[in-house]
Image 1 (cartoon, one colour):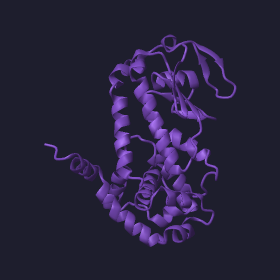
Image 2 (cartoon, one colour):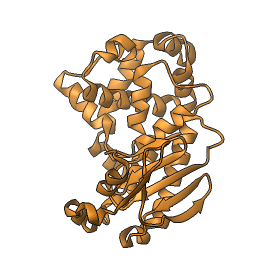
Image 3 (cartoon, helix red, strand yellow):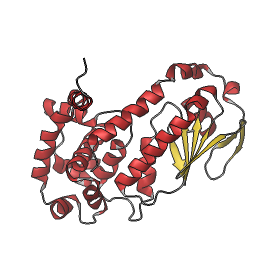
Image 4 (tube, rainbow, N blue to C red):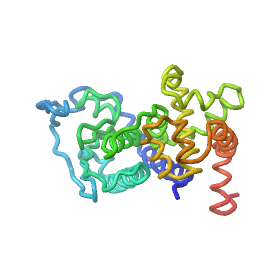
Length: 281
């Protein structure tokens, strides 16, 4: 069964990989336009400029990984390819995309170089092509891609779409911890307001996204990805689907979620990891 700790562990590995060379990449902030490279023709489909360098390529199952011929990236290329493949496979499995679609993943040496060539300031995809600047979280783009390619289409339940996208961003952020802070402060949004599209859309976007991610995490942990995806694809509305698929009502879901959050804060997750790995002095 899908486990919350698996997401956290994988997310931590990604963060370590990213930060392991971050100091080497900081100098990119002062790069001039000339140092970033001359731009070639703009692709009419993707809007991406052809680089003056030649992409290096690594093949992999379900993905071809292209990376800029940069010394820092060359050292990490195989490990980064494997990590992206693992994330893609994990998200695809969790959201029910079978079989996975072959994708192309283009990795620039940093975000500034990616923005220079793409005029975009965050990882994105066009069709099956992903564009990524090293040092930035890429899980969100992969989650959006998987959702867009599910045979049953995307969900009509707004909080599930935003919440699952955030839950699988692999940024290393613990959304349960932040939501628990809202709970302690008496500012947690009631589930009934998250569940209704009209009420959800009126909420502060940054806060609702955190809470939606935590609630989706609880649902997935407690009931498994298959049940969550049945909710995701339901056309009956969330409250009705919750009763039919899981057999609980909004009040019971609220009680379970509120009890879950304090047990999955940063501190509690560290305690569990230490217990699983033995005593750490």
